[in-house]
Amino acid sequence: MKAVVIKYNAGNITSVEFAFKRIGVDVVVTDDVEIIKAADKVIFPGVGEASSAMSYLKDKKLDKIIKDLKQPVLGICLGMQLMCDYSEEGNTNCLGIFSQKVNKFKSTDFKVPQIGWNNIYDLKSPLLKNINENSYVYFVHGYYAELGENTISKTNYILEYSSALNKNNFYGTQFHPEKSGDIGEQILKNFIGLK
Amino acid sequence: MLAKRIIPCLDIKDGRTVKGINFENIRDAGDPVELAIRYCKEGADELVFLDITATNEKRKTLSELVKKIASNINIPFTVGGGISTIEDVRVLLNSGADKVSVNTSAFKTPELIKELSNQFGSQCIVLAIDTKFDLDSYPDGEWLVYLNGGKVKTNKKALDWAIEGVKLGAGEILLTSMNNDGTKNGFANEITKLISESVNVPVIASGGAGLMQHFNDAFTIGQADAALAASVFHYKEIGIFELKEFLYKNNIQVRI
Image (tube, rainbow over all chains, first blue to last red; front, side, top):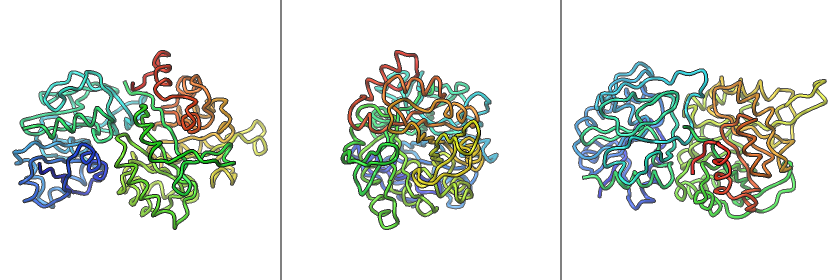
């Protein structure tokens, strides 16, 4: 099993590395195109701002590489948002793998960003195999992906949105499986088990 | 629904967990990594580590400890204590911390909050405020900001500093009432509520937990988004699982 984490300017890679190590998978952190292409699994993490992350990916020509990957790819948090079509954050055209748009949470009654544990429901896809409906996972985000045909999990905060997405070999979670206790660990195991 | 968070706090001195009363009389409370693993298993939603030695030569030891913690637990954690530069924060985040908390240095150089949130994102910058109800400076009393682990009084109102800090980019407020800390008489719900209603970021109530009901009150009366405690958890006076069951029965949204 060769799993790589795509290295770019949107951090929090250490937690992801540690999380995979805990389930017995050593990941390589790299921005080397050939190593990424040859991997069995690709993880695309990210905490940061959409437009600067996208321009970094373009500079490094990683945007095209990611779109063309054939092995299972898991985008986490900003990684997932960048796999969507467009983000209101910095008015950014993203990778366009998922058809969703990413919007800013707007509310006067709720605190933004959402920080903490919330439920996931209407679960489908092998990524979420053996995960109970309404399980709690950990979120930190001020922007959300709309519901749509790629939605494989929903969450409600201010409104109902996509907490996980899937299209073909591409998967994304808005929440942080690497920080979501045993539930998160199961999701990472499911990802590693994907064919 | 977004759950209310229960956060055990570990004060770290020379690599050990310690706990004082009213910010003084420090005593040993065990190995931080072991404690962290225990809390994780018991259902803590997040952990906070405050390095109360936090001198420069100790910083390296702290980052080693952070790495050990990060490799052993699968929930988010915050590290604080003596953080004053972008480089301090980078080292801790690269070691696996999810958030850092800033206190005295941010008060002295508010620009630091802005720089840190620009560099790393607001979501990982927690503004820790130590506050005490002061009867000397204002006729009806006022919650004022204290610095250096509660040793230095300022004339700044805690509410004003919280609002200012959020404007500068703080993503969360960790509010510790020095009047309540160590007393086990409950959280300072009045000031917690005031700040929680005045800022658009989560507020973590801290100081004073003694009974399960106190957590309930922090969430209902104090409008806190999370509640933090140390000794009641360290000395097993309150079990985290039992606490969450209690809150659940009282219609507080918690992760069980």
